[in-house]
Structures are given as C-alpha cells and as structure tokens.
Length: 584
Image 1 (cartoon, rainbow, N blue to C red):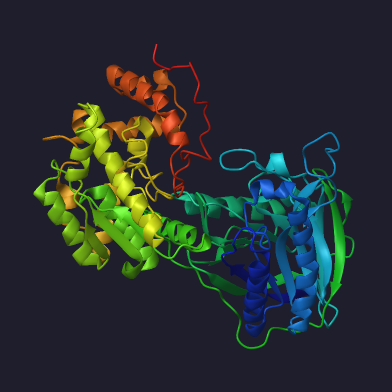
Image 2: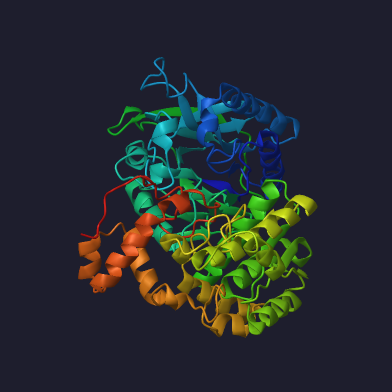
C-alpha cells in the first residue's frame, strides 16, 4: 500500500534579519501551496532569519526573536486556515549560550534548525548535523551539531502512514551521516532544506550529489534551495526532487522564485522500523496525524526547468546579486563612472538589467588623456540603455591639484582616478545614489587599481569575474539585445591615464594572467605546480609577487557577488603582513 503525498518546495528569497518579513513570505507561499492542494510545503534553511546570519548568532535578542517568531508563525498559519498544511521551515534555535566564553559547552548552544509546523504547533524539530567549515562557511564557529535524525510519521485520514526524514543543507554533502541513518530507519522520503550559494556550474554538481544521497537513503530526496543575494553570496534556487534510483523527477528554474508542486507515491511506513542509535546518529520518530485525503484533480507534476548556459547563468547571478544588495539595503538608485571601457560598460548593463535604466546614473569623467572614441563609446552605451548620462570633465580639477602639488609619473595617473572618485562620492552624497566600482577579478588580483580612486564604491559586480569572462559576458549580453558598444568590446583595454597607455604595458595578456590567477587564487597552487602546468617562470614569479603584494588593497575593496569556487573576501583569507613568498 502507498500514500500519495502532494509535496511543495518553496524556492523563495528571504532577507537576513527581516524576521517579520520572512514569516510573511512563509504565510504567503504556504497559502499558494495549500491552493495547489499540497499536503506539505518545505522552505529553505534559516528561512525565518535569512542566511547566513553570521555573528547575529551571538546576540541573545536575535535568537529569542527567531524562537518567538516560530511559535507565532505556527499560530498565524492556523489562523490563516492553513493548519492542516504541514510546513517545514528553517530557523535559528538554541539550547544554551553562544559558542564563546567560559560558559559555552560542546553539547549545547545555537542550532541551525528546522521545524515542522502543523495545526498551530511545532510538531517536530531537527538540528543540522553536519556543519560546514570551509570556503564561505564558518558554521563550526556558530552552531552546535545535532545528533538525532528527525523522522516524521505522517498519517492520512484513512490511516495510511509514510515516514519522512528532515535534514538541512550540508547533511546532503556528506556520506554516511543523516542519509545513511534515514536508510536504516526505512523512511519513504528525505526532505533537505538548503542555503546553498551559487558558483558557476554548481548545478552540474548538485544533481549527481542528490542522486547519490537518494541511493544512500534508498528513498526519494526533495531538495529545496533559496534564491537571492546576501552581500557577496547569491543563491540560485535549483530545487529538485530525485527518485531513489537517481531519476530526476522535478527541477526548478535558477534565480527565480518558484513553487514546485509534485505528487510522490510513498511506501507505507514500516511499523517495525527502528529508531534510537542507528550508527552515525540516533533517529527519533514523531507521529503527525492529519485529515489529508488523496490529492484532488490530476496528478501534480512540477516539471523540469531548462538549465542556463554558462554566460547566461553568470549574468543572472550578477544581476540578482546587485539587485538584492541595492534593494535589501534600502538604496533607490546607483551611480558609476562610465568610461567607455569594457568593465564599466558591462557593469552598467548589469545595473540596468537589475534595476531599470531609470535608476542608473552613468558619469563620464574625461581627462586630457581620455580618447574621443572612449567618450563616444560611453555616450553610445547610455543611448543604447537609456540610463541617466552625465559628463563631468576633470582636467581642470587635476590641474588645480598639480598647481599646488609637485607630482609626476604614477602619482599623476592616480590623481586622475582619485578626482573621479571625489566626483562620484559627491554626487552620491548629494543625490543619494549607491556607487558601484567596476574593477574585475584580474585587476584586483594584481592590484591594478588606484586605492581611493577607481576602487571607490559600495559594491562591485565584477569583483569575482576575471577579465576574459568579462568579454564573454559582454558578447553574450549583446546576443539578447545590443546594449554594449562593439567598440568597447573590441578595443585594447586601457586605463587612459597617460598618452597611449594600454593594460599590456603593465600586465601580460589577460588570457595568460587569468590562467595564473585561476591556479594560484582559485586552486591554491604553488609556484612549482604553476610551472609544471606550463606557465613561464619569469611571468609566474612576477604575477605571484603582484598578487601577494596587493592583499592590503583587496582587504579594503568593496564586496561583490561570488561566482567562482574561490572569491576574494569570504573565501580567501590571507594575512596582510605575510613574508611567505612562493617565488624563491
């Protein structure tokens, strides 16, 4: 005998700290799930608080607010007429003091938790077992792991029953943990709620991963992930349901909110299924009696959304990351220096796609070294996109400085960049725009920027985008609609801070530079490994010196959306004062 569970996965966009707003999202999307006839709806990891909450964990007031909101949400859902709907929602819990100070313990403290809400109460809870402590994750700093797998025995009105195990994010990335225990407990379904950040091609990793855990659990796995931007991180959704044999049953779109509603035939719960100590952890079973009947209408099929091509995927990530950074921080419009070069043109296009042209201001700030074609390219970019375009020449301001300061060479070049920064910040203060900086990952890697000049800004959409990918993105975006001047894409890159200047005067071709940056920064390869990969020895030694010497600049750089395996900032943490050098 089997039971038909109509399952809904709510792929939504919470905001860190907006507990009331996130609870309202749960109520709104729960109502949608109920309207679709769902029995159970699952929301992402830390849904009530947003994710990641970082050091907010250490504030008892925040922990208390999360716990109180959970109880209030359960009551509100019942008051909304949704009491029969089982709602799985992530939240911050605690059974002891934060993990710092002499009174902390290894067994109690803050918990990355979920709860199943039903009929106005918390019917079951689960604490995340595996706590990631790599890359962007610091969860061992914040949370205490759970040691008991929660299995919910759902009972329909006709007496049929099915067992569903509840897990959280990293639990699915580790073999031999909760999913192995789920198999020992003989469950019919594992629900896994996630706050899984995006990086390029991570969707290609997730499906095989979920399939492996489904095989390990010997049960279908329902994987729900959030969408949205949170500082450097962006979450891409990509929620899915995978059968025990690895068959993909349903998959959501990337970067868009969605409600995946899908019918699953679950086996009748085994009355002799074990609980207690089942190897890697214990298992506890909670009976939840419902008035559910068979789903009404035709079978629900959530479908399988198409995957995005690489450039489209990265573009969507950058657009969503910027949009949420601006909106969630209460800004209304953005401002950037529009030079006519490829980087500022791509940032302007991302900004227009994220917020609309009416909320984007581009300022051309030509100096005596700015070429006419760059000025023309900036004007064409503004015409193609419809953004608010302004021209503020800077040479007279530079001359005023030079009449009072005895500067030459690089100091004069940097002065131009810093005058432009003063203009941007003055307009930001005067008109309330949020300033974007436009340096790409290649430039940030080697310090090819002016501190307090072209590096000025509150956010950098290209911070994790190497120069070679910037060009690919520009060409791809123009296949959708032409918004970036062809000249900006095809001309040799130049900062135009001195006559005839080209980037290649100071740097190797970007194809060579990006390959070394990818190996050294993203791959943590040492000098010998880079040489073994075929890179020129003198070039490797030079680039590694530049990367190591620019750490102090990167520490002061604006946040920007992570799209790679290892971004500058949260992912890569090196001491500024550091005498270790790969080049010997």
